[in-house]
Structure formats: C-alpha cells, structure tokens
Image (cartoon, rainbow over all chains, first blue to last red; front, side, top):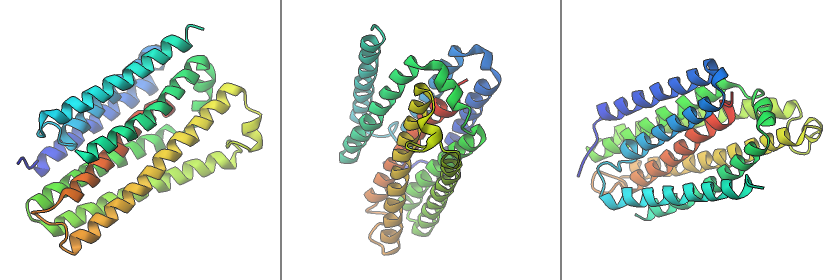
Length: 91
Length: 187
C-alpha cells in the first residue's frame, strides 16, 4: 500500500498553483489572442484536472482499472460534447 | 470502487451543464464576453487557490491517518473545512454584489438584459450554485469524518471514510477548475 508523503502532496500543490498563475496571466495579459487564449485556458485546466486525479486522488498508485474507468467516462463525455457541437452548430 | 462510480455520475451531471454552457456560448460569444466582465477575476482566482490548498490538506489528512496520526489528520480536516468556509464566504460576497445590482433571474436589471447576457448569468448562478451546494455537502461529510476519527471509529486500520471524503472533495475542486476559466477568464 502506497502512502504519499506530505512533501509530495505539497509539491503537487505548487505545480497546481503555478498552472493557475499561468492561466490567469495568459487570460489577463494575452487578451488579444482571443480564441487561442480560451483554448489554452481549457488545456491548462485539463492538465490541472489530470494532476489532481493522478496524484491527489491517488490514481497513479491505485489498480489500473480505476484509471481505465476514468478514461472511459472522459471519452464518453467528450463524445457527448462533440456530437452536440456537430448537431447544434450545423443549423 | 463504489465511490468512484458515484463520482462518475457527478461528473456527468456537471458535464451536462458544461455542454449547455458550450452551446449557449457558441451562439452568443460577444454577450458572454460582455457579461463576464461583471465577474471579479481576483476573487475567482483567490477562490481557486483556496480550493487547491484545501485539496492538499485533505490529501494530507489521509497520509496522517495512514501513518497512525489521528490528531494530525483531525487538524488537517479542520483546516480543509475552514478553507471550505472561506470559499463560501467569498462566494456570498460575489453573489450578493450581483443580486444587489439586480443581476439575478426575476430581478429588473437581469430581465432587461440582452438574451445572451442573461443566459450567461443564469448559467453562472445555476452552476456555481450547484457547485456551492456540493461544497456544503462536502463540508458535512468532512465534519462526519472529524467526528468519527475523534471517536476512534476511523483509524489507521480503517480509514476508507477519510479516503472517500477526499475523493468527493477533489471532485468539487475539479469542477471548480473548469468553472473558473469558463466564467471568469473569457477574454
């Protein structure tokens, strides 16, 4: 059984805070890049989510089935979003 | 496993709302941009930091109970709870400012907004409201873990409750990680 150290938890927080700073800075100061900054903000948000799931939620050290299930649900949701986009925005 | 399966249902619940947001925003890009200027990026960023730190403290509380340190685990759980309350207080100030300006469904200013902007605010209140409800529920769950740890019912041999509370709390953090850029950082 893997016990994550306090130090590792703290390192994870620092990584997340850095990613947050980057997101805010890009949005506030990179405003002229408009749609690119939206995409970048969402991309960084996704990286943050992966970090939280993998480290804080312990997926890295759990049985692989949990990671597989998370991936399946994520793909399922993305396909809902994509299908909806295709349908709605083609009207 | 059961807890993860439950989390998947929560993801799809909020996921559905994010898809609604996606469609409305695609159809009203300028209105969403205009409306988003009413939100305070500093408060949103502050709340993001609060939740990220609280995710760390609850993860640490699991380490504590795993290493047999119940007292430390309880302290870290109290810290997480405190941060949750800070988040809700900031949210309260944000919401009351909006409502004071009439920007709430049913109030005059909101009713007279162009459709795209009222959609933004409707989604804002609905999604952050549902999220805040989850924070409150998370707070109650954390309180239960504190109580049971104090009683010795949660300990080094049996701490599944703490782990599940952690998973729930991380989910609440995850949802906010997406809510924040989509409502506060539209530029």
